[in-house]
Image (cartoon, rainbow, N blue to C red; front, top):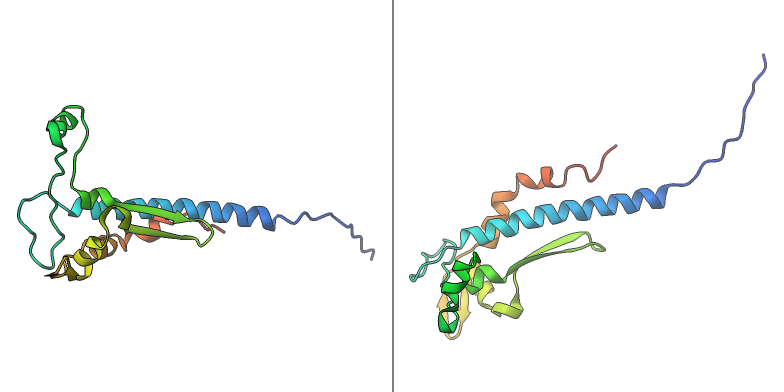
Length: 152
């Protein structure tokens, strides 16, 4: 009985595989982040009256001076209040996470007062959450949004 063997060069593809995996994870996080962002913005409706505690907050349509809001509607733009306009999402590829919520640079602490309740400008606000419910509504979607990021 004769045993024959050969040495075959093996190329280490670990770095390439890790780079592709991170790229796919970031892509999945963008998909999931956008879905939650879209849901949160959709929960906030325009109304001159405040929403009931426990319900998503209402927004007032921002009306620029000089009738610009009318022109924006005619040009096909969708004018909306400051709260839904302030909601954004961003993916951190290094930390492999996504942050979704109202930008403090636009709203300051108003988003926090709406979401959790508390004091704002000397008045007490009951919670009117919109980000937590948007996440809850999309929990079942998250696995499919991340599908394909890791395959065997």
